[in-house]
Length: 504
RNA sequence: CGGGCGGUAGCUUAGCCCGGCAAAGCGCCUGGUUUGGGACCAGGAGACCGCGAGUUCGAAUCUCGCCCGCCCGACCA
Image 1: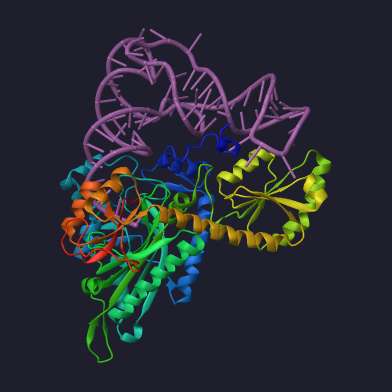
Image 2: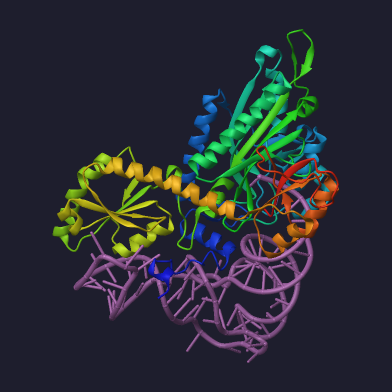
């Protein structure tokens, strides 16, 4: 028996070390987080996965409410006329938008084969004179609407957010990471000055960092995107970037400064203090269910998920162990006051399913539940419970008295160790190549982050992408140590330091 | 969107070349024995063979079209 098998590696889960992509898909489906739906590129988020999303939502929602943001809701469909107004934005999103061009009045019972003929279209009832776009993001509907509500500098700032779904017609899809439809939040804010909008962008980015690091235990790098990687229509884009356990980067949240680009296109004007008409300064920012994919890939191991406690739907799984009705009753009686005490303090589940303990252990292990409590006759006799840690796999006995406090502390500690492990992993896979050849060698052999000086020229960046399959992730705000003053690729004077990596 | 591969019971697949009773393991249900790391025995249910056309006396099997998924390349939260 190998070491891994002794530790209870799931029977049908592909090992992470053997095939990371396969492992990822296996884990998500075996843990019942999500599944494909039969609709191309669109997934079903199952209760265990959705519970994670709800916890992430709550964490972020609380943060932005604290700074005065309010939730609202805007339509799923955007009139074509609105959508096309900001040229750069349209160009960026056009390839992946879906259109609605037909609606009623006749029920569609058979595929409309004749509609391929453009001339016939116009004659048939139901073809929309003004086609609708299904939102890939909502700038182009929120702009024209907000224009009506913004007249004076007294109407600013407007700090809006909406939780919704969006649609992007993706060709290569993967559960949570890239699906045609996904859930996210999109914030849209309107300001009287360029500087205030800039502060907003950074504040939200800091909120994203907090969600990633303090809730999901995923260390991230905050920074600014290059011209090539920025959001279509933005003046600049900032992001948080995380490293997955295969060394690839994942963009986990973005925050954009639009300057006056969108307010110019949508005529969002206000009268300033000097009673002059001025265009508003706007921002937008988003974080999606992709975060859940990041959580899986940042912390998982050969045995499945490892859940960060603060967003774990189940933090403690309790497995009662008994031989017969008598010992069952004894264990339940022992458990009753304990679970009463735990209620409201930790998210726990007593697994009373009619199954063997070993099967239950495996069940909760692959789901990444941080702590597992085994409570059997031996424990009852000793007035204790046995707790097993998902990360270290250590088994320890805890006295029944003061259990809630003890578990709460262990969950906090678990979060810290998980974060540290992810951070250590990132450090071990972060490089500082000194030459073009070194950079090439890194990605010939493997993956990871490479910090390097860069000229910030589009041609140069595209060349690197074409030759190495590596893109710039961002230009970190905090750069430690010395870097050369020449671009690592072309040798021209460097303008910035960037992180290069392959990415999801 | 191009190149390659696949879709047969809830899941994983065999059968397909060479057309002729749809099969196995896991899972599920019932009963029994078990229960501190994925149990065992016995019985049972479960399939429009991805969808649609065609060839044929006969199609899971051959042909064409479509849909869905996976892998590899061009675009992306």
